[in-house]
Length: 214
Image 1 (cartoon, rainbow, N blue to C red):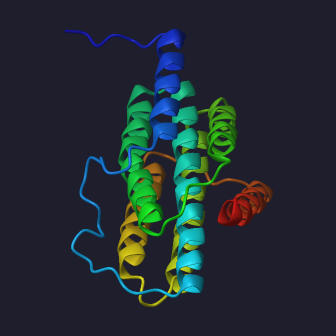
Image 2: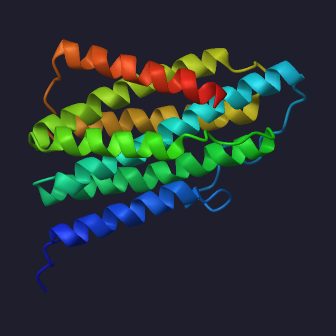
Image 3: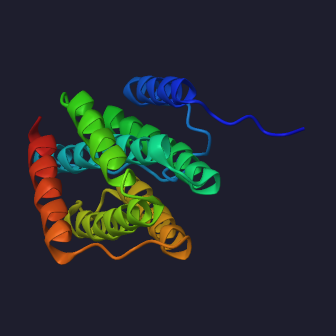
């Protein structure tokens, strides 16, 4: 049986569904077990707890943006295999989103109140870059994941030493983000110009600084 080709309406409805799934953030119901399962909770001071919550809120916001980015790219992908790769990566990162929200709940903290902005902005950026072609879309993914891995490594350095539960989540996320970046390179990603890379870093800095507090 021949697989049905998605129409623009199909893609639009798929994007709406993805946005709703992302905003709902199914805490407690990820497809895979939380890496922190079985890791004992540590006693953290109020200052340590607040700092860990701020970092995990940033990670949660980053996963919201990742959903928008992947779904935006998938919405305009010209190669069906690349589109499927994007959607599979987005589905896997829904687990990251749920794990971060679970940890925020444990820390008596809430996700960023600006989540709709993070998702919408990333979706628009993803779709806009994807219009240029799949190689550039994949290049954007590869560069994003490279920057995300560096960002997660810095969080491992910044988390309280005793916060083993947050560390378990962040370490797993970093490993999987690295794999997503490698997959994009293997699929034919183009290297983005240096000015674009710098602009992406500035945009990420704005989001992380804001999400830490709001």
